[in-house]
Amino acid sequence: AEVVTETDTTVTEEPGAGIGDVPLTPIMRWFLERGGPADQFNQSRLVQVPASLRLPDLTAALGALLEHHDALRARLSDGTERRLEIRGPGAVEADSVVRRVDAAGLDDDALQNLVRGETVAARERLDLGAGRVVQSVWFDRGDTRPGLLLLIVHHLVVDGVSWRILVPDLAEAHRAVAAGRPVELQPVGTSLRRWAQRLTEVAGDPARTAEADWWRSVLRPGDPLLGRRPLDTARDTYSSARHLTLTLPAAVTERLLTRVPAVFRAEVNDVLLAAFALAWARRGGGRGSGVLLDLEGHGREEELVGGADLSRTVGWFTSLHPVRVDAGPADLADAFAGGPAAGAVVKRVKEQLREVPEKGIGYGLVRHLNPRTAPGFAGLPTPQVAFNYLGRFTTAGVENAGSGAVPDWTVLATASGVGGTDPRVALAHPLELNARTNDGPRGPELSATWSWAGGILDEDEVRELAELWFRALEALADHAENPEAGGLTVSDVSLSLLDQSEIELLEDEWRNL
Image (cartoon, rainbow, N blue to C red; front, side, top):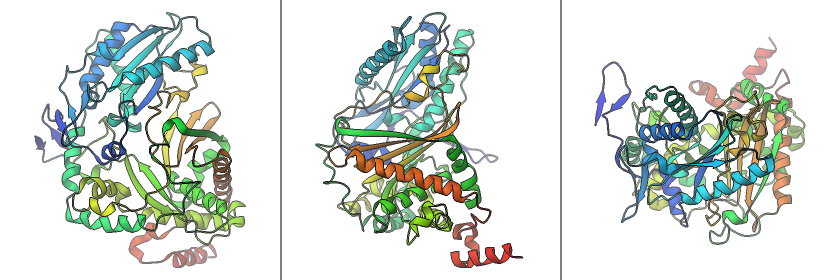
């Protein structure tokens, strides 16, 4: 049930409206349609917790979290149509999701080994059908040293934004419990259940149905085969995946986050993808028509559902959509030297991304939720490369845990993927790039993790592309220091009907005044 006030456009829900069957969202369907084991697919965080932590207080705080956030009480029901079921408060006992492990006196290596073993065991306790979607392990290091808390949540009910809700809420709940106060967490706006219901309704809108042809035109050309063979879901699993992580220096990262987007009136993603297009073009010798990518977004496009407020909602809202980025007929030597060609590619890729309707959220609707349009995607090529920029995070390393410089309830940098996933799960792409900015003692640093199917690509091939991408990013940062760098693009002045060449002609005339 909904109540809409006359003075506020936000839709508020009656108590209990978030409980019951939840239609699967596009990203949930995308994952489950891949087949294979699903129970251990998770996200995890390792958090520094107070030395004064006590098991009863931690259990009570986790209980408050389970009561407050519906998704943590979810269960995947089987049947003719799989649905996510949100159970009512009290359905999950807090005692069943927390485990204490004695870690007092352990050196760094022993602690690392203990954490590794416990995370695998915690991951294996997850069970979608039984509704075990949360597990935690407290590594108790004694009364004089802050401990570590491992949190593992099934990915079907959590995303990157959710962690920015869950960890502060758990900290607040613990403070209240330890002080003997009632736990009072900020209210949740739109429930996961209501959002999923409305997505299903919106997917059938005529305007959305008409969008399907545009998305099919993006996919239809496809790309040349990447690597030695096509992806094989039976052979190319997480157990066969290889990984490479590289870090861009803070001095370059800082300019990529500030100077470059500012002069081009662009988003950080535009800059990162422009550099990717340059790297891909250089890798291919300047031939081809760019690369078809699967691009992730946070998916919390509240304007899609009038009055929605997802700022406090826990769940997996991620959107995934295809996009082609193409450096065009760029002078690659000039671009990699930070010359004018670098700026032209930023503008070109920025406009390619602006052509995507509503940040791509409609793709999942017409591909997975609309029964009239979904069949039209069968047999079409799909992207072989996935790109995801996760955003900016303030983190500390596990080696710094317990130092005075690291506040309690800080997420530790090395732990974002500590839980791993079931090695039997099929890879979604032959090549994936996940990047994030870590704010640490040296300043902001861009960390890029490349993952690939070991039976399709070699490390040398991936490393070459990774190093080209970093070189392209440095070139864009250098180019932005030129006083004449930047400028408007068509999407910045869409009402003027000017094309890019006319915009740049006017800018040149203005500079010469």
